[in-house]
Length: 133
Length: 433
Image 1 (tube, rainbow over the protein chains, first blue to last red):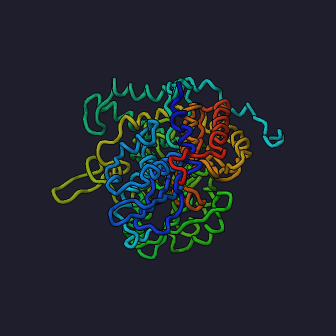
Image 2 (cartoon, each protein chain N blue to C red):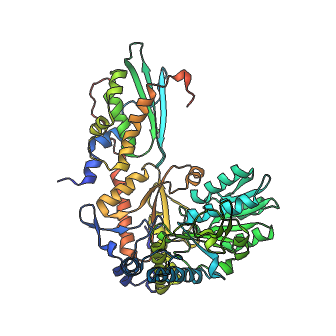
Image 3 (spheres, each protein chain N blue to C red):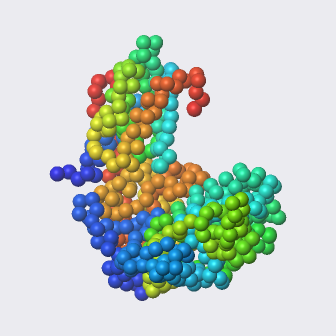
């Protein structure tokens, strides 16, 4: 039986950490939001390009922090690629923890849910009305 | 690593492992049956049986409110509570019994000075000097005081190796400086600050000095008269005592002149419907029912520490720290925060260029049973100055052993290996991603 630790850093999670999905800057972003976890300084920024129908044309993330915070952001963006704003809205915190996989203690859940919080904020943050960058 | 890079251990400087047997929690297992290695002592320490028993005895035999009843239990509790004050006085060598004020901890002690002395003595144009390496508890109360009074906060800079820049200090001290609030040992860098020098220079400039001694009182001898500090704050839970209790030491004349901070029972002499007169020291600053049993528990911790010997504890921790430092510093990609072993107390924080402190803390716990701290350790500005957001900290106490340090070092090496880049590729859902 694998130990908790082995479950926490499963191979596919480390793959996302080292080879993330869409890490970087999105030139045509229509929406963007950033937040951090004050406990540990994890930072995630997500940029979205939405069309008029609410479809996600493209999305990118950037950030710094622990494996869980960064790998989960990569996994979330991969999951949402090609989907809609409504899909983001319907994607719950519980869904996010399930997507990540290994069971997390409350403090590590905060790391995993950072990107989820940021993407929920991003859909309400058009880029012309925010100056976070 | 070449053998010449490490200093041989002087085992005569190490404490006997017999003391460990007094700490029931140290035989706990964590994770999957791994013996606990507790290296988070700068956050809070564990309790010897003597402290646990002292507190249980009060609950089982002596407990009642203090300074109130004339019944037997109230008299017993009051006697134990005031004996604890005398023990704490002797522990820090205060001149007077009533210069020891019991608070809920070092944070409350500092806030008491900021609110009481600060509001009465600080105004626009005045300056309060702190350092870059302060814990939030010795920074935020002064930010709040500055905001209330129009005073200015100034920050003493550091040297490149994480010691106080005494030239910066000398330049900032002026006739505008009302107070220097400074940490005796940095909880992040481990730096032992030159308190005698700092205090002498402050007094020469006409400023008072508050010492945040939360990390020094538990680990080395403290003598407030020799230091000549004006205020000194520490917590019970970092010195084998319970949480929820601490001490504010202040010079008699200063405490006497200060207005009470919290109002309520105990701190009064006489109360009319519209007015009150405050009690004498120390009651003036102990409004409400105090943390009676924690105070008694803390005094049992003082007994215990004096029995082991503060000098012996310090020497033991110096050995562990040097041993750990010399083996950790050769790890590629790892950066130890703070000065060389001769300038530091029993703790080591480090940053790693591509591995977050969370990974170290998680794997050290899960695979090695080692408890360390990950994060900013309540020193966000200090981390920012160093260009990092978090670090991993191992902090030692009298019950830690060289074998435990080895276990920690082995864990650190395993983490660096585990998270080393190895050209991983994420599985593509679609070929064009």
